[in-house]
Image 1 (cartoon, rainbow, N blue to C red):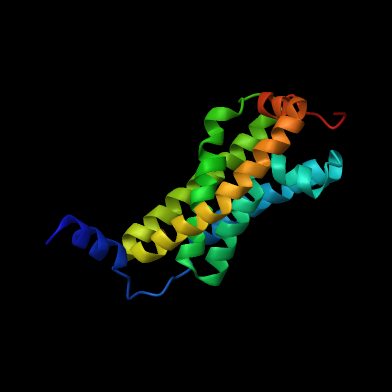
Image 2 (cartoon, rainbow, N blue to C red):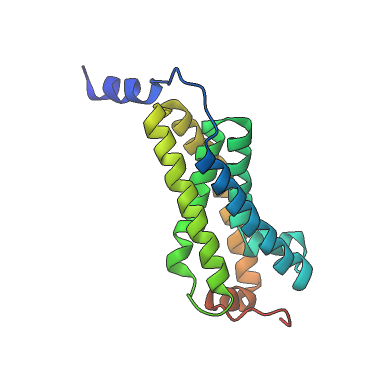
Length: 174
């Protein structure tokens, strides 16, 4: 068997098991939605940043939305796309954002997102959702590449806000 055939077989093996929502998954959905609600309150309610500002400064929210949507629809592919985005914005956020000031709350959210990433990876491996994982990767790339380009332009235009966000010094008076 050639290497390409082996890879193809590996990726196309699908599980006979339908996706099942577990208690752990429900808890992670709830915790991540709680953090999204808190970010909504901070950015839209307190800072009056507008929806675009909120999405550009808190890209965790659309990532969480994909994860939750995939979980609720029972779609491992959409969940995987959300988990990939949550890894980029949540898990890697653990190393980008400071651990002081208001960022401590954001870092708790990043930990919840990382738990969602681990949960998704576990479910993919446990139930052999290889094709769904590949579809999720492709969906994540299609969504993340243009979003990242738009976000980088926004951050350059609002460098002062972005720096305060990363430092944990962004306050309601900004």
